[in-house]
Length: 86
Image (cartoon, rainbow, N blue to C red; front, top):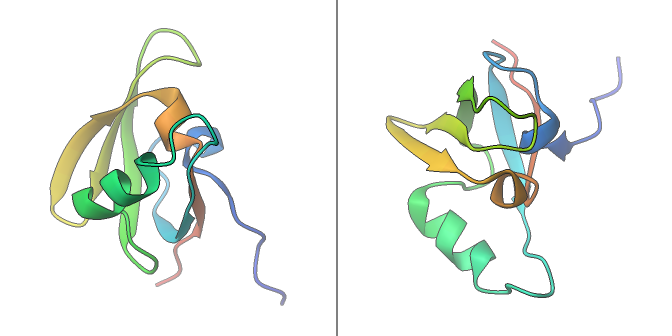
């Protein structure tokens, strides 16, 4: 069975176990990639959306490794993830 293609963390369902594949940054904020990596969003790391704001494009409460963070939707779009197996 082929590996699923990465999608953005922002598009992932709440509660699904995911694996970070890649972190990129938008052209207007190139520093975001380093900042997200410093927070622990690194390839291979486990991540899960715990909660979403009232609006679909609102803030997300995300667990990465053993830490919990609030991310803006635009920041979550910079994190490519795939479903976690096992």
